[in-house]
Structures are given as C-alpha cells and as structure tokens.
Length: 191
Image 1 (cartoon, helix red, strand yellow):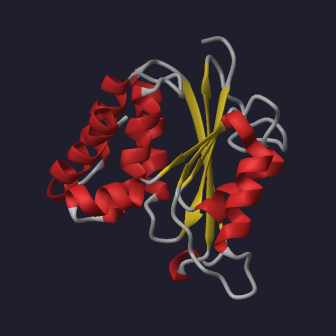
Image 2: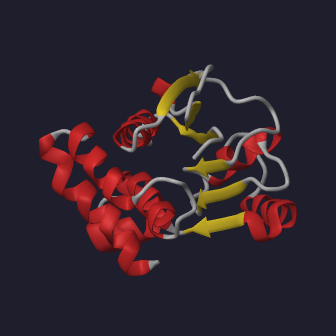
C-alpha cells in the first residue's frame, strides 16, 4: 500500500479505544507499515468523549488526521461516531456500534438514527456489537474487538485478520486474551 490509510476511533472513556488503537498499530507494524498514533480526549476517566487517530502506510509523517481525510471511522457509540463527520469525505467508511448513550440535552435516539442513516447512506455499517457480545459472551466490553473482527473479515480495512489476531495476542493481557479472541472470531461467524 503506497498511500497512507487514516483511521479514527471514537467513543467514550472506558470502551477500550486505547487498546484498539494499540492493536491496529501493532497489526500495521506486523505488516511492515510505518505507523503513527495519537489520542485526543477530554474527560475520558468519567465517560467523556475520546478519539484516537491511527495513520499507517509506506511513510506516515504525522499522527493527526486532517478534517476530510479519514478513510475509516470506527464509532464505539453512535453519537460519538457521528461526531467525527467533519473528518469524513465522500469515500469514508463508517462502522458504528449500534449502541446509544443518553446525554443531558443530547439528541433523542430516534433523531440520532435518522440523521446517521440520511448522512451516510451506503457508507455506514451500523452493527449491534454490544448486543451480540452481551448475548453471546455475556460481556459487552469486548464489543470494540468484535467490531475490529467485523472490519477485518469484511476487508473494510487494509490489514489481514491474521495480523490483527497476532496483535491482539501481543497487546491484550493474558487474563483477558481468551475472551477477546472469542469476540474477534465471533464477528466472522456472525458477519
């Protein structure tokens, strides 16, 4: 891959954005790419907005993605995923967890869905990752790993599923490894 691939992950504190960023960065390194990452967050310790940027390719010079330059946006919560629209262009793919957090003075769930679908049309994959992980694994905290598996197996990102799985083994602590591998592979079964 000669061009730089730009990924933004958006969610709230406690959803595992930093771990997902580390996994994607490690997978890109495994495949021989130059990688740059950055975290941008506010009150992440209190469930506030968090976003991470990952850039990889032949040579990535800076970690931050310019507005309108994201190739791929992974939203771990629907409103947070939508918040990244200014980084998108007409080719940006959105994979968003169909998970809604109610915010004080925020949009109602129905309005969020209506806006999301009308804005993104065919570039949006709205995946019930939290529901699937809660039902199948009794733990929705691995929904980000499930989404990563979905993206890998559907070839929505230019990284091999084997590289991502190897990265999961390197990044995730041993006591959580089995659950995370199950979540990743569950996406292949359900996708």
